[in-house]
Length: 118
Image (cartoon, rainbow, N blue to C red; front, side, top):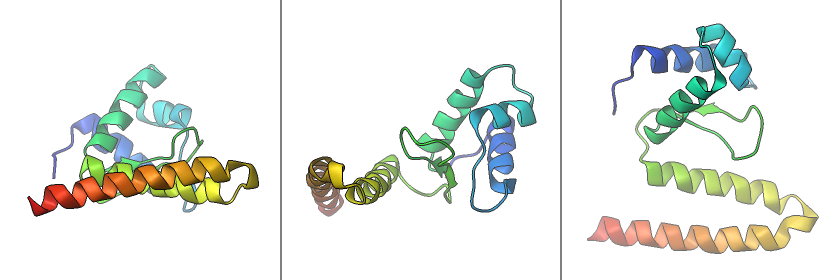
């Protein structure tokens, strides 16, 4: 588990304190934490994600979720792909994309299992 910087902790605390069932926007995080730009927020969020503290769905607004900080980047990637597959499976026009993601997910999971065995 990684130690958090003051700014990372500040952002994580704000995300955790956000009302249940939602997550803050980049603007809300920027304003609440007193940052001057969204790029600062994005850099901090990226680092928190890399370290297993948070995750979000790509191209989805307000999809930040707090994790326990113990997941590896590969586990985060696998969970994100699983969430994307669920979303795509629910849309009739996205069945092919969901199928392709499932194939990629299977390959990634097999690679991970093989690396754990070695």
